[in-house]
Image (cartoon, rainbow, N blue to C red; front, side, top):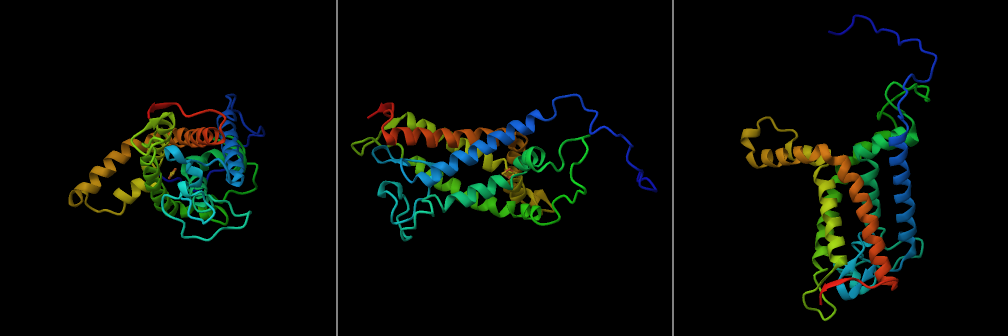
Length: 265
Ligand code: FES
């Protein structure tokens, strides 16, 4: 039952009475996020070592590579766009989509609201901000764009799958497979898990329906996504690491730091 009058908050002078390590999880995730941002920014502006043409390996940070100054082997969809000045990286198409998708993701929001934005900082911890307006004002109202980023990210995922199909190629043009193939496919699976378990994906299939019985296919998809959805945080973290690991492996092989371990051809 709703109380007739708003009750005042308990007058506790201490910032918090919590004695557990409530800062550790958000700070850890915040640090990993920062690492990803720094790593991907450095790689984006490097402009080199993003493709291993012999084996069809292309880093997800540069795909799709649609500019005239892309290495031809990296342009699985042609080069319809002109060459760009140095301050526009070759990954300029994909980066805003991926960054927007992750930045507005509910899981990451929770992490950086607690670790960086400090609003709310944690349950039962005093607010450092004077007032709490949630996501009703600028800039946080922009978080509502998440559903649109989801559709764009689904397109990027389809592109990643297409890129991964190119990795079954040997140096002589016939079938081949190496450690890079495995790494790239693991990354695609992690990204698929992350995208499919997204809350916006669940809503796209099961939202705004009055009768599931009239939409059996959407119902089945909704049931499937609902099983993945509780693991969204897991996929969010794993896919962050697999993107970095995939990019690093391709950079290392492309730069000649070591050779790809080949299983076939
Ligand atoms: Fe995390 Fe949609 S809620 S990607």
